[in-house]
Amino acid sequence: MGNAKLILEGKEYEFPLVVGTENEVGIDISKLRDRTGVITLDDGYGNTGSCRSAITFIDGDKGILRYRGIPIEELEQARFTEVAFLLIYGHLPNAAELTQWREKLTRHSLLHEDMKKFFEGFPASAHPMAMLSAMVASLSTYYPDDLDVDLNIVRLLAKAKTIAGFSYKKSIGQPFMYPMNHLAYTENFLHMMFAVPAEPLKISPTLERALNLLLILHADHEQNCSTSTVRMVGSSGANLFASISAGISALWGPLHGGANQAVIEMLEKIQADGGGYQKFVDKAKDKESGFRLMGFGHRVYKNFDPRSRILKKAADAVLAELGVDDPLLEIAKGLEEVALKDPYFVERKLYPNVDFYSGILYRAMGIPTNMFTVMFALGRLPGWIAHWKEMREQGSRINRPRQIYTGATQSPWVPVDKR
Ligand code: ACO
Image (cartoon, rainbow, N blue to C red; front, top):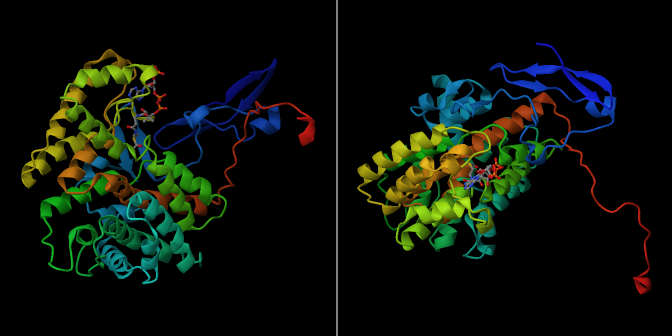
């Protein structure tokens, strides 16, 4: 493949092309400013490749998602802990590696006892995402040594679910449940969420399988807003815990991971309003309303998000198995049907994204709405870690975009009595 040519004020410049293993093509403009004196402007980075990465491949037009080359539809059969290993270390663990990995994730799941005091300081109304972000950042106060990266990775993965469980218990005023070493990763989380000291919890295999699936489907999604945040913060040399805490904050927003909570709130509103979908579809089409169909649209997918297909199927199966009859599932399906036939959504290629059905599953599992984004964060953790590690190993430059300045030109300072 040749070079890209740029003609600027009559002068011609050539820039090399970069081709990925799936034949995606980029123009390498890293010398653009040096050679031409100009920069590119790309609002929201929709056309900007920020790095080379070997972790996750997405073809948004075809609805393809693969972790380390393996299609998401095949990874449905895997366990979340092996998918985490795959993303972080680049290959599926063999039996010995997997056993050792799981043992480590179990052994490091306790929090330092003093960390419990942090929870005492949070108000009962604190959003669990705020607690998760703060607690993950505070792990660097206990483990300030950044040299043993693998150990810190294990600590983070193992302790995040304990932090999430404690955050929930704090918000409902129940005693913290400590992790139990005989339980698998996902079972342990359910135990910390739903068990009480007064009686043991019988963990439903249906629930556990649904959780495993949800975590796998969320495990990575290349350079999305939170992952780019992790890489951005990490590019300054910030440690793993600090970088991932920043990613958790980025995920919280309603246009990103916070959308799963927003979807359920929207479906509840439609239900309270009598269940008519068209009114809400019309409102979403009216730009003046400021309302969007939450769980619809995606920067990359201009076709079905493959994760939403899997989740729609799983929602039917899991709700049936658990014997849950949730009217919101019917509203969601109806809304999807109406929207997918509407020219506004068709023309803009707006399809349901991962958040559209995940909330219905979380609800059926008994997970409260304000914990939905925490669930997303637990799933996305291996992806963030894999990207942080890859960025470090690549020895990436500090991320520092440029800007086109649009403010006042040089102006004098005026003393206060003359203003
Ligand atoms: N409802 C109504 N209109 C929409 C929606 C929606 N959900 N999403 C996009 N549009 C419209 C936009 O208004 C725009 O219309 P225009 O061309 O007439 O101006 C067009 O579709 C393109 O949308 P953009 O905002 O430019 O798309 P962008 O890639 O910047 O945003 C995003 C993607 C944030 C996901 C957007 O679709 C959205 O806000 N969706 C709802 C929130 C949501 O579900 N977020 C979860 C994303 S997935 C995730 O993070 C896991």
